[in-house]
Image 1 (cartoon, rainbow, N blue to C red):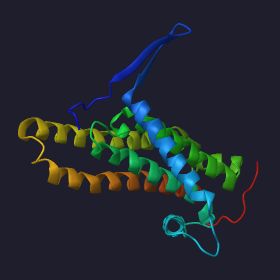
Image 2: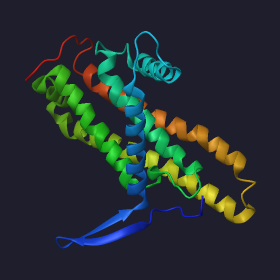
Image 3: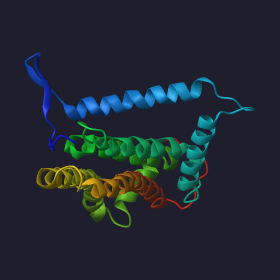
Amino acid sequence: MDGQVFPHVIVSMELLGITVRITDTVVTSWGIILLLALFSWLLSRRLSLWEPSRLQLLAERVMVAVERSVEGAVAIPARTLAPLIGTLWIYIGVMNLVSVVPYLHNPTRDLSTTAALALIAFFAIHYFGIRYAGLRRYLRHYVQPSALLLPFNLFSDLSRIFAMAIRLFGNMLSWELIIAILIALAGFLVPVPIMLLSIVGDLLHAYLFGLLTYIFIIGGLQAEQTSLQEPHHG
């Protein structure tokens, strides 16, 4: 860590009369995406049913753990939700932990990053709700038990997504600030125990973000019906 806490602009250019600024947050986020994509490609190149490698066995155990974490609430197949929730856990976890690498900072200390993640969660909630309950049946829960509740239900949807973005942003930025202050005051040795503790917190915040997304998806479906078997279209 080099003491730089807030995102800073790396490249600034004019494009069609619009000023485009690329920050270190964008570069780090895309770097993580490319590394995860490369790792996934290398991992899936030589999959074997009869003689799986240790890395393949580890990946399969991770996938099974994610599926078991998201199954059982409603009759949605676990494999339907596992890719989304698992990706959020892995991607946010890596972004949170990247600050342990010297001169790198976690992109989740930038509100624009957490807001983008919250938007993904927001659209995923409604996507699964419409897919499994049908458009009309899903929208109906906004006016139940009374149409007077429509503005309150809409506000509830928006506020909880806003809260997810602010919570992750605030937690990650606060850790960056605390460690930067300790480094400035005491050097690099004293903050080490706190940095180790922050690793646990980084993984916990990633888990909570994915868990909240899962809870909101299931909550939207359970508001309509408690048991869903096949997707409805409408």
